[in-house]
Length: 318
Image 1 (cartoon, rainbow, N blue to C red):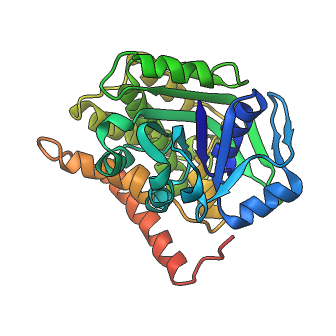
Image 2 (cartoon, rainbow, N blue to C red; image 1 turned 180 degrees about the vertical axis):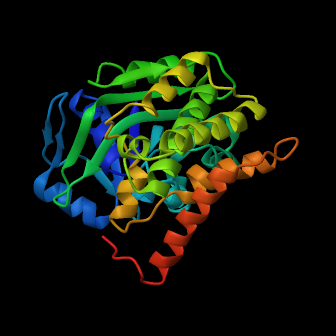
């Protein structure tokens, strides 16, 4: 199976590197700067689950991908949501009648965008849970031991296509799971991530510091309740085990957990305000009865103000 990984940054580089190290047929679609970095230093991963160093990993530039002789079988889409339009443009010639597109983006809106461009039959559901960042020298740093990927047919069930993809993604030193209910899993992750992103960005602090402040624990739990209510009215109520686990994480004294969005914000980088928080609010407004989201709406205003300040040069850009 020929696999194209769109991006060799933190997420794409981590999972693509694991797959390449396991002998899979992987090519990275990258920009010129990253291509030069990979040619010079290789693809390097530092992880508590085992380091990787792969010299000269196979890459193709977006401007050259149309020269590839045949479509890819599987495209792993690991870009940030705000880069989705550019990613779509770069993979158009790589998508054939039998290509499957597996996005690992946050939120849900990207599924609608990809389906409109490539057709429902080519777009899978997918998500990953991994904390990784890219050092200035291009090294991918894995921040803890979690590294899982789930994927499946959006209509549910386990198809022959999913079983074939599972065979390729399994055995590559990360946790790969074919899911018969991938959209449910994506909603559950979104509820948790949106709560974490909105809470830690609004308070500019990790969970432990937030709950140590007066009213901090209530803030996080109220955010979580807003998010899961939105999921519920959209037909994807989080399961009891998911709710229990999330509530425990949002009340853990001394917890250092933050959202990657907070790290991006503190570094003056672009953030996924519209995709993680804004779209969730939109789905609340579109729900029957037009749900109220007072805390999420405040957090969204905070994030959009940051974006406006950044655009006008008021934030030091990393």
